[in-house]
Length: 356
View (tube, rainbow, N blue to C red):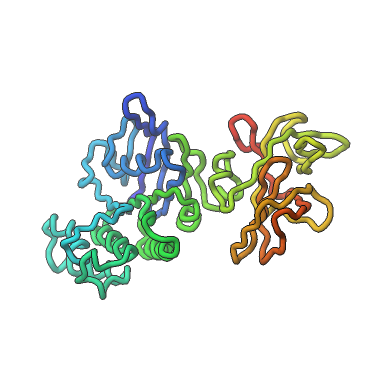
C-alpha cells in the first residue's frame, strides 16, 4: 500500500474555482474520510487522485511518484462508485475478474484472487449469480470485491453507501471497517454523511468552499472543532449556537445574551470584555436543570429510544437538549436549562474561528 501526497492542489473550470490550494498527506495503510456538504470539492479531489479530472495547478504523488500526467489505468488505484457500475450480463465472478482478464492475468491467479475476495466479503455462495439476482448490499460487495482482486496501491470510495437504506448502510459501514482492518489498505472515502465519517475514519478531512477546514481524528473534530463550520457539521444532533458578548464584571466572566440572560464562562476565557462571540454547545451538554437555569418553553420532544431530544425556545433561538432515557416532557412545558461550563465552545463572530 502507498502513501499519497497532495501538494498545493488547485482546481478550476474557467473562472469557477472548485479547490483552493489543498495540502494533504495520507499515510500508507491509513483510512481517510473526506467529508463536507454537496459542492465543497471532496468528490472532485477524489477524482483528481484517480486521474479522472485534470489538476489545474499543484501536484499529486503516489508512493513518491508524481502522477499528474499518468492515465487512470497507470496509477494502480481501485475505485468503488455509488452506482456499483456492474456489468449486468456477467456473473459475480465475471464482474470481479474482469480487470484481471483484461490484463491477461493467468487463470490460476484470477481464480485464487476471486475466491479469496469472495470469501472475505461473504459472496462465495453467490459467485454464479448475475447482478439482477442480488440485493443492493450484495451488489456493493461485488463492486468492492472487484476492487480488492486488483491489489491496488489504494482504494478510493465515492459515496458507496448512498443508494442503500439506513439499516443496510449501518451493516455495510461495519463491513468496510472490517475489510480495511484485514487488508491494512490505504483508503480514501468520500461522504457527506458525518456518521459514516465518525465511524470509519482514522482521520477526517472536513471540507467547505473548496478548502480544508480541519484535519484530525474523529474525536479531535468532535471535541475541539477548529471553527464554527466544523462544529456545526460534525455531530448528531447538531451543535447549538448562541450569539452574545463576553462580559467581565464583579470577578465573573459570562456571555451576555441580552434580556438579562447570561451564561457563565470559564475564567480562563481569553476574549476581552465586550467581544462579540458565538457560543456553541452540543445537545448532550445542555442540562435540563432541576432548579435554577435559563427558562424556556418546550417546542418539540423527539424520543429516539436511546434518549430524548428536547427542542426549546431560548429567547427566539431554538435549542436542543439530549437527555438519556425516556422523558415525560411535552410541548408547551416550561423548563430551566443549564449549559455545562466545561463543554462550551467559543467562536469568533466574524469568520467563526475557534477562540478557546
